[in-house]
Length: 316
Image (cartoon, rainbow, N blue to C red):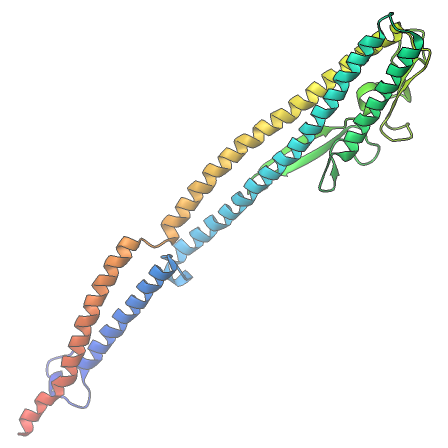
């Protein structure tokens, strides 16, 4: 601000310098306001609001983790959907096995006919093993358990959140003839009637040539053997029902986590928006105010530049 008597000096126009400073500051504010409107962001650099920038960066990082976690949940559900579909196929084979075993348990059939049925059931066992081999996601053979031995279960841990502890662990039980029918863990299990040790047998997954176990039906298998085998099929069906139930529980947990993640993403995006994004109504009002001040400052500068001419009146 010029002091008393400054307007009477010509060499240094203090009033003009003050007007220039004011105009430059207004132009800077206009440029900043235009940047906010063009980018849609209230904070474009850390210097605009260092605390807000730090908070928003942390929120942005969290939103990125939550979005990826949402994708992870989708992938996890895909894995379980594949396993469930294969479980359903295996269950269908077991149901057909039970139907055939019930047919062979009837004394209206002869040994030859029972032999045909035994061959069909053996083929269904091979189909179950093949389903396990074909159920693959990425590099995981989902239904063959651990890679060493094709037994037990495959443990999977899904990252379903942006924090280290946000995980869901599930186990997909191996499904093959050895696991379903030779649950005792020995080399072979007798599935026929008591005293008939070789009529119907199940090899274990660890000792069979295929690594998954297999069913063997002797031509001497009687109706009593097949009646006993029905109990083994029922046990296998119960095992499969438990497997499907376990997958269903995990799928339900993933669905709940998916909904929670969606809500968290929305909440964190809203919080980040309140800090980072431009309020366009406010920015437009500010733009109008700054344009008026710019015009006023320009007019003031013009008057200040004309001020020294009044000194000519002293010279006459």
